[in-house]
Length: 267
Ligand SMILES: NC(=O)C1=CN([C@@H]2O[C@H](COP(=O)(O)OP(=O)(O)OC[C@H]3O[C@@H](n4cnc5c(N)ncnc54)[C@H](OP(=O)(O)O)[C@@H]3O)[C@@H](O)[C@H]2O)C=CC1
Ligand SMILES: O=C(O)C1=N[C@H](C(=O)O)C[C@H](O)C1
Image (tube, rainbow, N blue to C red; front, top):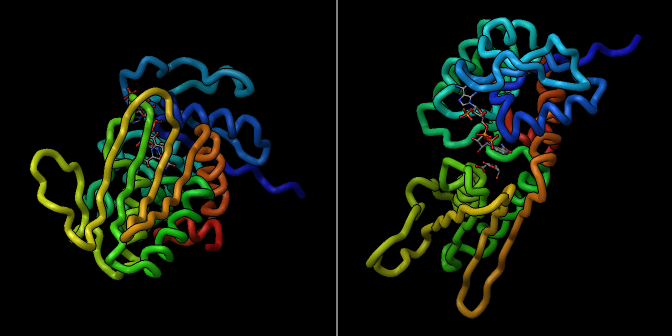
């Protein structure tokens, strides 16, 4: 007997990533889109999602019923929306893939709480390439030691609202792990003016915004007389959508708990 399609609800469905996910689901018969959620007042609410989906499937703003109907909710919306979405996921017993960035420690505490009831995978970057890059960064930071300065730079499209990007912070955490330190103790975010000389062992961040760049991250290891750069360049949002859907398929039916892309990719 054919396996039942995995039922997916999308939060932030009208946005750039939401649209990329809808297009990717439309091309995968093993997945079924059961809801496309936007915030109340969004101009798309009430309008059809469009082909290949049936005309009665419209963008909607009420996520309660969609959480009940979904095996997995995929959230690429806004950090401010997270609390209500986690509540709905727990009530509806839906797994969740969270790709939204700009998360603060209190958001992670909410995710930890909800993950006692349902399976949740949170990833600042759902591409395969960045998962591998993080591994390489940990290894390089461990091998090179604190005499090599680490600077992380990122370029994103002009509409991005959070900085540094979630990926840059995750790469910073990966480097800190390699050095056996906590990122929040060594991070330099936003230098300006007479900053003084660079502190040994610190990890610096720089954010550029402009044009339509889908995501460009470079981790620079700068030593005495030599430099190494590890870079990931996203050519489009399809890579994030593909990874998020792979994560959703992997997560459906898993026990409650908190998971990462490393679990999905077996890394
Ligand atoms: N993990 C990953 O691999 C990736 C993560 N991201 C992250 O995903 C998030 C979305 O990115 P992107 O698609 O480019 O952003 P967009 O602004 O294009 O999309 C976000 C959508 O969510 C909507 N939204 C805002 N608040 C709510 C809410 N309370 N409930 C439901 N929908 C809401 C926005 O509406 P409105 O336009 O009215 O504000 C918008 O339509 C960002 O945090 C981004 O950093 C992006 C790419 C990859
Ligand atoms: O907002 C984006 O576009 C992206 N956000 C994520 C981040 O903050 O790291 C991932 C990707 O770089 C695109």
